[in-house]
Length: 429
Image (tube, rainbow, N blue to C red; front, top):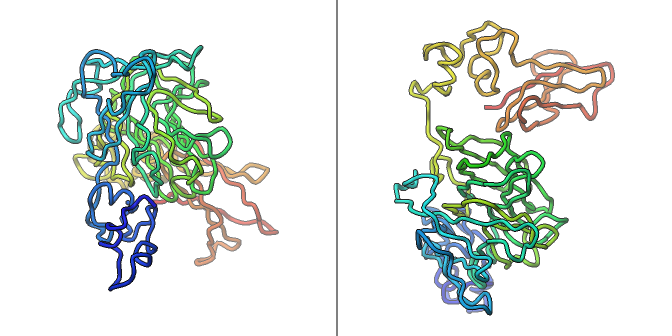
């Protein structure tokens, strides 16, 4: 199970039971202290698997600080014989390498920030990747060395972060991905730019073996540094993005999932930066720079991201100060107020991206002849649809949950009662 017997005896043995009984109690994928870190992660980090406050940090963190010029070392022409050249700074040994001279990215001093916002560590280099879509055998990429612990790690949850700047447009590009093909064409994980509209896509196969995606609302533009974060819990996949011009990362998409990771037959395949997989074949090479790539086996708080979500809310009312000034002229309005008198409070207008100084822009639903309800929406929020046939107190019952999307959301009652009904759309806190 990937755990030394002595380690299992130390932490899991009960009384004087036999070795066989002690090592049968747990396997590497289990999480006895419920801290979202599996026994594999606790063993590699040297933490206590029975103590929820004894937590590993990241499983892998590639900073690309080995050099500021030159290419990733590649060994001789035999190929793939110089491992552990792109170093994992966590101390867990999940190092990367490249195959040959024609796949070796170049170190450069072009970076998204001079110091990592979370830690303050100096940032001197990134890796520049050359894209060769005509011959994927020659495209730049780096991958985890065979046999490192990260390759076989089965996640209960994760946070995956990367900063990147692309030089290509309207082509598929993968920033980081996990190789393999557990279902359909989708690899286990990929963070990629979509060819049709240049939107960023976090694609996964969830714990139920279903391909799921979280898609950004904005397009990725060339020549601009972006920092992206993907989080996956047992129930939600989220995508955050910060562009150079943003003051803080923005939650772009939330997608319901059934488990963060699919435990498939080829789970020990490598993680790759700069090249993807589709239908188990190399695909979607990246063109540009990539920096500060980190994988953590839990859903981090946004304040703990490498590029943290910071507050722009000096009056602590839950509404962004810049938005308040643009909407109201100053910070005097309360969240519960209704500046434009349209029946929608200021906080709801802020959360849904409505115009709080325009009485025609409000949170209201429309009912089409076919029974479809539509209403204003935004990414990262959730709505509950409730129904009543009488409008009396206590008669409202929930009939659906809708994950917010940019622009509008919609719902159609799958089993409407005979004689008609009344509906309410509730924006969840």
